[in-house]
Length: 106
Ligand SMILES: [Zn+2]
Image (cartoon, rainbow, N blue to C red; front, side):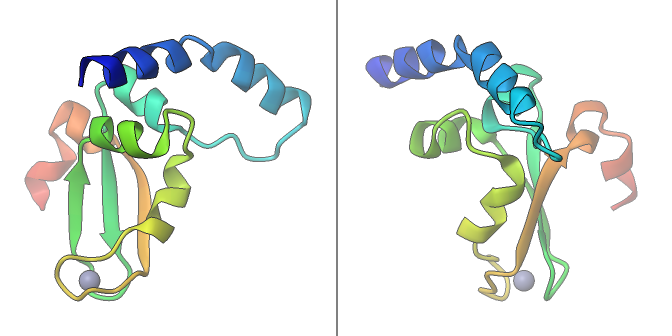
């Protein structure tokens, strides 16, 4: 576990270079990455498009599996709804987790 944590730290250190590379390519979309969420202590909101089940998940274990530069919007393609088993899942930064305000209405 210790070695994995060190590897993530090392790769996160190179984020600036990666972002400059993206900007240089004039990417129309610059999606949030797992490392972005982790550094901001944000969770990932997963939303099932079939049954509307939603959940906030911790990005840290996903960084160990997919790498810190994995784009958050592409996570949905790798997820499966725990309620209806659908793969039609949308993922985005969970802004509500940070403040706790929006989640209270759920
Ligand atoms: Zn579902």
